[in-house]
Image (tube, rainbow, N blue to C red; front, side, top):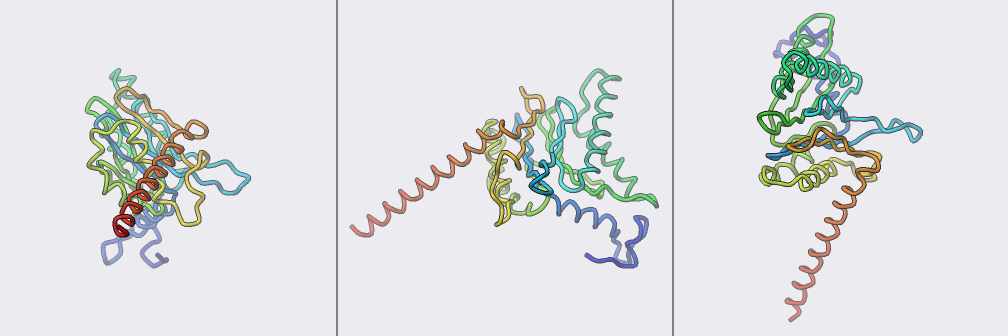
Length: 261
């Protein structure tokens, strides 16, 4: 992408019917660290990679709790995510105060999209440079929504956003049919496996410092698992890898013995 005469503000269309400011905001999401979301009948889960600006800095949080039944994971500009998360918390509190009930996830995401749409239309504003994966469990079951800077939102069974998200999507596309009846631990494993697919070749892998999980479900208020609490889950996927490698080696040995016989 590069600067041109039609990208000076959000209210200028190009002759091809494009609004470049929105496309630039979408690019900011692609540059952010990866976030993965998936849902079963009983649970909705997000997993994120956290980045650190330097070895002297702490890793930046990418998962935010909105209410007991809603949480978000973000990719893109963290400052924009903080603004939207504050708006979402306010809407949840307002609804609970007025109606004494939880705000439905679809309604909440629609309110965020309406707020973002104003920034794609009015001169002097810019789109939010952040993408969100919203997970919730409300009266109608588990939910996973993606919100993007163009003010669109979509309902998904599984989704990944951010840098190298396509690799995570490929894993999810191969396994999503097993999600509806999966247990909580199985869903966490799938989230971590998908997140690991998005790592670059120079990465040190998933660690307790750069990985976080958010989970909400039928018997589970939204909870963030990170730092030392996530170590058992990371160890578990490593053990599954070891078991798979051992079984593959045994099959190869059996094949080679059959050929030799």
